[in-house]
Amino acid sequence: MADSIGKGQDFEAALAHTPAQVAEFEDHTDSLISRLQHALHQTPSLVPLIVLLMSILIFGLLLGSKFFSPFALTLILQQVQIVGIVAAAQSLVILTAGIDLSVGAIMVLSSVVMGQFAFRYGLPPGIAVFCGLVCGTLCGFINGFLVARVKLPPFIVTLGMWQIVLATNFLYSANETIRAQDIEAQAPLLQFFGNKINIGGAIFTFGVIFMILLVLVLAYVLRHTAWGRHVYAVGDDPEAAELSGVNVKRTLISVYMLSGLICAFAGWALIGRIGSVSPTSGQLANIESITAVVIGGISLFGGRGSVLGTLFGALIVGVFTLGLRLLGADAQWTYLLIGVLIIAAVAVDQWIRKVSA
Image (cartoon, rainbow, N blue to C red; front, side, top):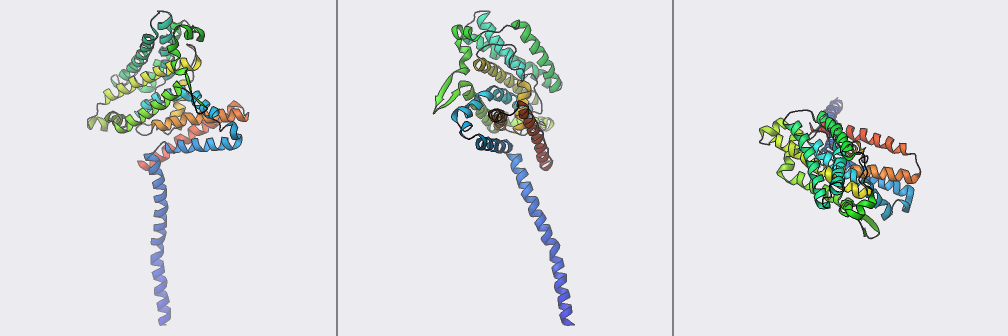
């Protein structure tokens, strides 16, 4: 009888401990997921970096030395330099929970202004370039003023600006292309970003170097300056930022102006890339820049992300494009895979936001 009572007590004691052990196991599992989500929240560029390294590894295994060569890898950088620069401008706007559909048009108009001022009006190339940079900055200021002061939605403002700038571009240039030969002979400064340097068998253009330096500078400014913290604060919660002393209107205007200036630099780099000044170039820059930003892990809701991730996003597109081309695959596979990456990137962003909320 005593033995049965003792066994019953032991059984009850075991039951008493079982729920606690299960709960402890579940808490441990949840903590692993929470730590992963917290890490992705703190370092949004981690996911695109992993995807970039995996894609390079996969195409490297499939193509061997054909892909893992200095020429192929630097060719990717040359192909994405314009998109990378424009995407850096787009990143600043999206970090404020906005969007800029006019970045491509501003880029092309700035390049046209540089070319027309140098050839139609005979201005020195340096002054023509400066006027193009001012043009891009002015377009950005108009966008920022309408968004910050007039309180119009960024999507509507930049959609309208895209149409206005695009029409202005064709009307002003009379759809005229300035040939590469003429630029080389009379205004070689316009092709400055197309100059190349050889480093250990790898060929880099000044445009590629500018893109990398631009991203590094913006990454530092956004993370380690008061202005950068204000950009994140405005994108996260503009009302709370206003209450904490942030001048939201001034921050928004400065972001759009800087975005326009960067797009003007992209226009200068575009001349170096294609050699000529063409009003019909860069037609897909708007979509390509948004694609790089989304794949790069910057939240479309604003307030979170890294411009380094944007660079990784642009490089992912470049790796897929070149890798599939070398494999002889149909170009439509590139669009298919990029579309999958876009949806996956937004899904991951939603997952991270749900946990961090």
